[in-house]
Length: 194
Image 1 (cartoon, rainbow, N blue to C red):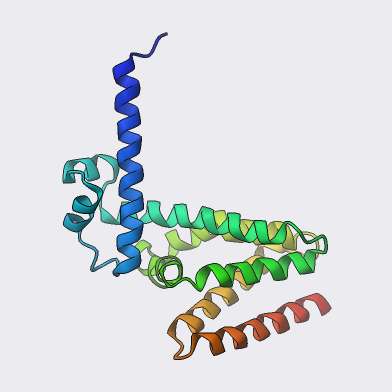
Image 2: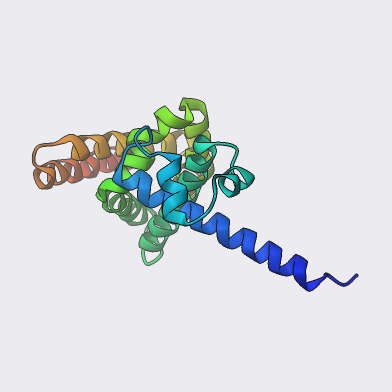
């Protein structure tokens, strides 16, 4: 069955509109809190109508979730890339932890993924997204050295999320990061000796 050219063009335009909405929403949510990010400003920045916004997303929260999902996938790619060069699973885990903290040292990443997402999306949805992304990634690494790996991955990620909050709210982020790095190293050393 042959697809008509106008259908291909319409599908491509729809995909481009959705990508533009996600891109501009991410910038807007990075610059302002979720609550302060107005849909009027978003559609103006993306140069689309509100109808186009609501064609692709049920509401602002749905769009926020799409942005979080994009960022979650990017974060997993980043932490797995950091771990790829390490043969030893403990060094791989340490590299993943450092990469997670590095990624979340970006204020917009910390704001969206760690500080606001649990509130905006709700605890259950946020945990589900983390489970599908970061927990799964950490569990794959931990599966070589710890049982049960998924439980330990959740504990490690919980420590990392708290560490990001400590850094994000500290008066001196550099000092807080140094202290967090030392604390995470102690945590991993304790896991290794157990």
